Length: 306
Image 1 (cartoon, rainbow, N blue to C red):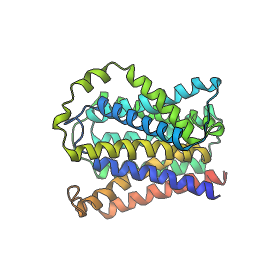
Image 2: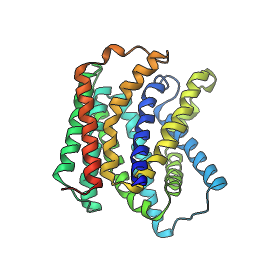
Image 3: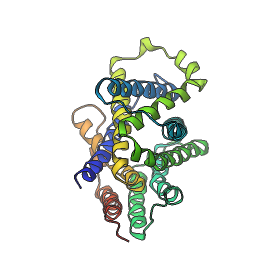
């Protein structure tokens, strides 16, 4: 029971870090670095951190040869494809479209887990997912920016959601055999190898003028590498060890709420523009739908209620 609640806390912290990241990382792309270069920095930095901690502080744990293929698949879908399509999709499409498409992830996880892991699908779980999805979509619509659409960008964002859904499902068996730290270390190692084989990584990184990047932008980049990459992926693996993929993915619905909270908090301390006037009773209702949906999904999944 204690480990289960810790897993829930870990997943909530993941989305808290993501929520803050949406505000903190604003202005980094494409002004100073391109999406591909940013992704390369994230994967390289996180991989180095994982290996330093693993080699210096943790007991040795090796992966079996039979699992290398699965690790490579997890890396391909969970790190490389996921991040490349998300950042490039976000740069093409509007924020409202990204928010709506993001909500397909838990539904895709339920479908994929049903076919690959034979995870039980109940009407109560489906109702919780749909309630959370409805709240997230309505909250996104209520906070729309009105900026341009892009069919290609929307397609990229859907590929990102589908790719991450596959990752959450296929990584579950590895969590039964290895520690979360071992899993995520090797997943990122293969992800770094994929990025090094991706030609635009070299071309775009070589064009970056590092001398004009301000210190505050470097701090934002470091936060994204350490907070929104290193800790989020590690905590996700920890949560996935004790919870089902569908429960883990349901926490994504909390991100629009957390982004709004951090926007208000950061404006109060002068780190961002003032968004206080955007908080309305309508949005509070949508936030409640999201939290109730996540609670239904997690509670009844944990207690196996039909």
